[in-house]
Image 1 (cartoon, helix red, strand yellow):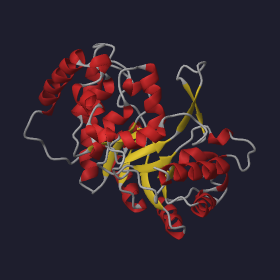
Image 2 (tube, helix red, strand yellow; image 1 turned 135 degrees about the horizontal axis):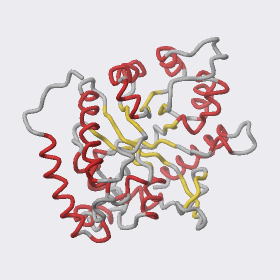
Image 3 (cartoon, helix red, strand yellow; image 1 turned 180 degrees about the vertical axis):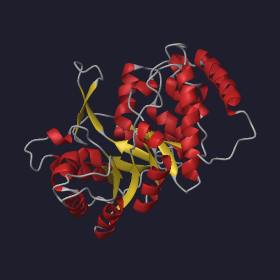
Length: 332
């Protein structure tokens, strides 16, 4: 991929690092690392007067939340509507719309023009790992055309839940991240809940800890989906989502602000709902992450396309959720 050879043996370093991770896992309480455990009692958590690190004036939206409108109406109408609501930034989940809108598929430069026309900024994009493998340079070209600072994936590092698989995945993410950094971009991974599981081959080791420890902080960043992190906590107890951010504030440039309502019949512990209609502890979370770093807020609701009545459906969810996030941040 045209990347320079490293002077050190990365694989050897990774294996040494995972040895330390295993030792940490054995010593930590319920699977949390000592660094995270220490962070959970840090004086920073008690400093309620510290400035919040989630800015109010730049709330974004993951376009997957309104994917039905993108498909049916196209990016022009979607961007016009979101801008009128008050959204400032958009995160992509693909660059296609219904071909009947233009009589052909829209191009990435045309999408950029529509962003500019509506005063919106591209903040990031979720691209499948398979697409990254097949066309790294093309995806980075798209990111540059769209003017985004971040680009990444919503895939788990690996679908194989072993330490060795996550070590191999970490190497791959470092490679992608280094290529992105060479263009001034930040490569990120968006979590769901399986990343917080314990490794099947080393049950004392949490997979997320392996990934965090073995990806280069210069090149690989994390987008915490707060809802899925709390689902991970529910399914694989022993960690605090906020503690990860507090211990590594500059590795989390973005959050997915997604809400959940408790449901004991759901194996995830929560149902995805509109922001403000759920019960996730956002009030404590936004203080507990500490006073360092900047974490851009992005609303996402996987189920918004099912909101009734439809229309307006997902647009109505987008509007109400934006109001709820703005209200949360303005009061804290």
